[in-house]
Image 1 (tube, rainbow, N blue to C red):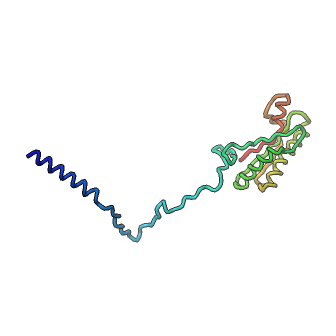
Image 2 (image 1 turned 45 degrees about the vertical axis):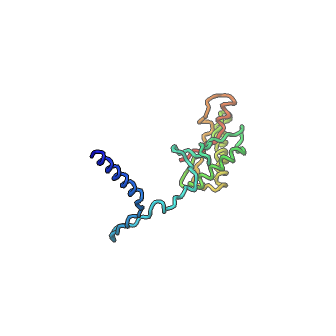
Image 3 (image 1 turned 135 degrees about the vertical axis):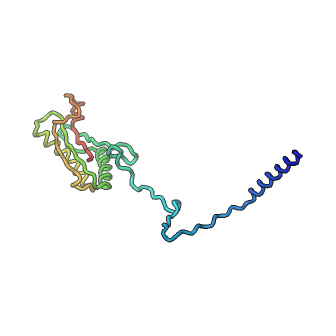
Length: 178
């Protein structure tokens, strides 16, 4: 008799499995919504839009190149010169693109010199260096109202040394985003 019960149970389980496998998949009937409920489109029906502009700043507000690297903000000059190099112009073009996309951003351009020359001469040269950067940016579409310039002359050296290597680091214009 126990063999009969075990056999019946086995047939019962097998039959249930066959019926479960043959069951059709039907969509449940839609539930009627009352008038006050809000229709919400399914998430898949809404297109996802990619951000068309690259990220222009890192989390410390430093400007980024299109590839995501930090963009140089120091531009170096030859002795007694305020002329930008071809490399500097390419970098400044990236700054101009960032600033034209971000019209609310402001920057200060600092002009610096090495310790040689009189205080008055170095202040004037630092101003010419800052103005060279400003001129390029404004000719590239940056609003003049986004830019402030200041000359520090020899007052804020990057390198306190008294040799050509130090002087080369001190002859610069620096772009500072605000």
